[in-house]
Length: 380
Image (cartoon, rainbow, N blue to C red; front, side, top):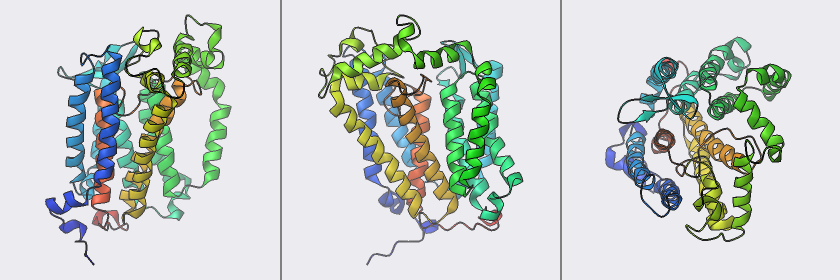
């Protein structure tokens, strides 16, 4: 029987041998689906989206492997530093961010438009995983102990909500809540928070921007304004229905190719995929996403360190929420909130965030035999 070397003694060839290449292959396949759909969205042209997507995919997959080679103790040591950097970038958006489509979410670096709110998702996972690494059930049972990690989640969520970016803010809160639950916080505390949120609905409603309130009203009755606020979701449903079981064929979707479907290269790309490839094509893609999520949970379950377990589970949940929110949005199950479909929608920062996060998951699995002391955490 082959004896695995200790995780901290692994050399680069050993680490590469322990990489789950099935996980990498599935992510690459999803990215290639994105390339094909962006090619179709541009009228069977590599310009202007598909070729950029391909370059970013190649770079992102390479970066993912590099991240997977890094000892998780490095991420543990610098978790709060990375969080502080991401938070500073969010503040910079408030001070000097560039506007696009009525939102201030990006920092123009000249060669790239950086969206710090995407990076904050990874930073929140790392910071919470470090905080809860040495926590006992007695610790998480004390309300005061939960105040610092709650602020780590709520503070950036407020900044992101002000950009405004409701979808990302909801994702941050949901990912943070997942890590609280995995750390041992009792379910009844979540019930109290949910009850408080329901009670605060009138206040939240007044705090929403006009267009966000309109999205909620449109969700409740999209036919009330079919040529205005309800246009997006009505066209999306028409495209979904017209795809049928097998779809209308690659590049043959009437709603997308005739430009009835808005934002077909970003938020509504799943609708275009379903129109061209039908229920079967959509189901295949969703199965690939489910495989990524389940593999991430498997890697979280078999690692020896609490930090690694929380990181792998947190990133996997982030990935899962991306998919669920986007698909629910374009099918009319929730209001439109502007969340991309991971590795398929056009967008550089979102793709790099997903692949770097998946690199962390891979790295946790590569170093799964690494034991990190929980008490005290400074001895890690």
